[in-house]
Image 1 (cartoon, one colour):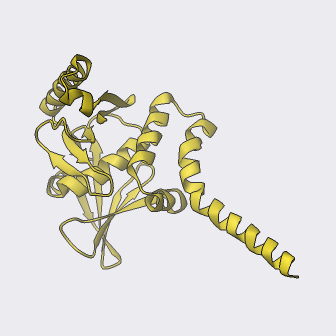
Image 2 (cartoon, chains in turn red, yellow; image 1 turned 120 degrees about the vertical axis):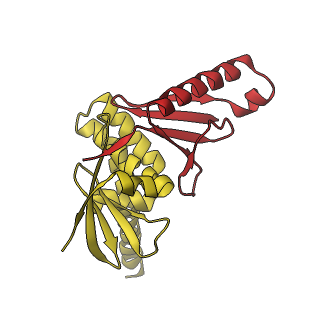
Length: 81
Length: 136
């Protein structure tokens, strides 16, 4: 399963998609990926940073949406306090 | 005597096991004990998903999470569990405090994860954005 998690004041909002179903052209999985791509682009435009999370590895910053990622986390823009 | 020793060892084993898993259990259930909001509960779940057992233990017992710098050996960022400065530790000594926060209000657990991700994946930008206070 792939997952996009977007941090917000509500906690994290999640969208998941089945990567195996996506490979065989399942419309539901494709729709979930399209929605995840839309949110990814929208949050990036607002200044959010995206990280690909792989178990046991340090987080990796990514610039473009990757539907093969197991987990992507979007964090809001940061400023000096 | 042998049975007594076995019982003592078994009990000690259970105590060690309980101590080892207690931070994870605490992170899992503390949102319910504390009556936290659904946002804080979700953030606590994300935190539990993102940290190793060792990191959870450090956060619960010490009140901070240490994130090693990916660029500089001997540098560690000490991220507090609650709000506050992030300490920069070099060669075991605090050298700087950083003040940096998200533009959007987030639950405390999410802020810990934000710091961890930014340090691991975008350290240069993180340091560039933070207000720095040198420790003298």
